[in-house]
Length: 282
Image 1: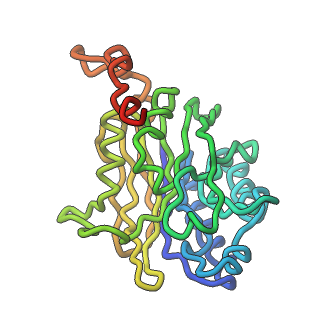
Image 2: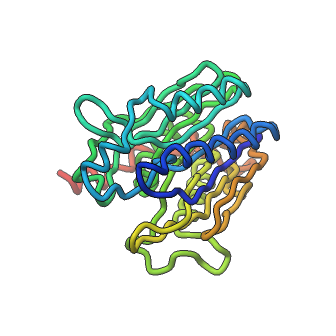
């Protein structure tokens, strides 16, 4: 399956939102014209990640069926394909960091970030459930997580055990709390998480990030797509330059959890032995 990743240098400010959204649409359409079946955009794809104030946050946020989902849906319908990306979702009770998946029939579903990071803990509401989305035109099952969620192995494991073929991660990977931003091969620390999950759970993983800076924070770029089994299909993209790249991703391989004739990731599980952390909580 051909998958595209859009890695922008998102411009800040209310006045830049429409231009950011239009640029992402242009890059996504280029990849659809090259026969991509899925294009992944970053977390908060059309606007700055750090809003600076609750007032700016409110001005940036949009309803679930707002301009981002409307435009993404129109493009997905036109090309009989799928787009995943992040918005700040304005609801009656507050604002969520939300990943949205649209397809040939319009909105497929959305996921609200469970694990809030930095300023999000003070100004955003947390989601409270994981979900799996059926992509019938591609005959695959996908899960969505957002950025910091990737640190929490239980979330990925839950989706893997529930039968996803593909984990889609719109993200904004930052320099916060990191001693090394990129290693000698250009991998950021989160790249190793994506590769490790693809290897451990035998699922495909796609992460779309951004580049640039906001105040003292550097965004890491290094967007990546990984085959089930851990082989890198795309990236990591540059840590400094915007870009959009297409790759062939062997998603269907995720359905076979066998390790040659030596093991089976589902058959060989021992959940009755995995209770140590529960005992510690008690």
